[in-house]
Length: 286
Image 1 (cartoon, rainbow, N blue to C red):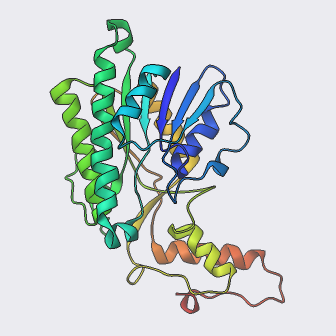
Image 2 (image 1 turned 45 degrees about the vertical axis):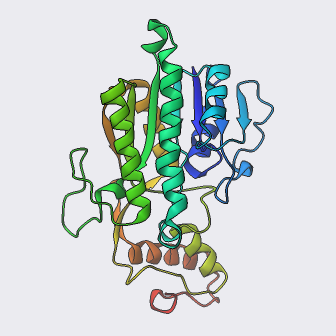
Image 3 (image 1 turned 135 degrees about the vertical axis):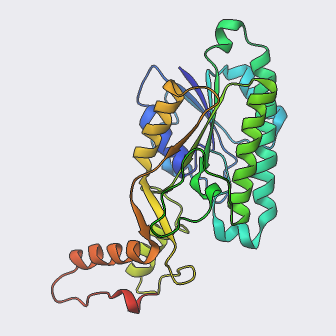
């Protein structure tokens, strides 16, 4: 099995590689532009493995992507590459449009050209899988059922709008050009090597340093939380067994307000403190 992974130095992409590079029957080519959120330290001790290679390339660079495709000859393409920080998308939306929309277009275009050169047997084994987010469905309302694969798209930030756009492009390349695709929309991930700007690691770092935790609005927004290793296992299942042309929602069945998540972190940190040490209270840290 030969898998081309885009954005493999990012949080979720690196988790996928760490888990499946251990299987000697799987060869992985990792391409990543190594922006602020890309970190090769999240892929320790694998650079010399015979079933792994890395190239510093942006998915916007269609010609270089083609070179890699024809050289590596992947059976699967997993697109993790994306700008994914909501606050950054509000202050600088252009980069989100460039990476998430134009980048996805460039990657699809390169993959379609490569796919069309394959023999029939190879075409039957090829799949382009796009990793997206549940934020394309909009906010989770209190006591409302979670989004399903048939829910309407209602993005509410430049980030979620750019991901919604990329989803539509992927579906269009399937319906118009018959490129074999699948899409996974996941809820909020957490786990090792997550970029420190994200809510959970940022909260932990702030509390350890005795600082107030930056929290959006009143912190009453509800999100479903999913451990990253569980997510990548689901991605692999969809990659191997998911029907072509389908969308798969991947959730953790763990919907919580941001303030409740923060309170859980505080309780855990307080549990680790010595009896003589001052305990942290939620009302004093936001």
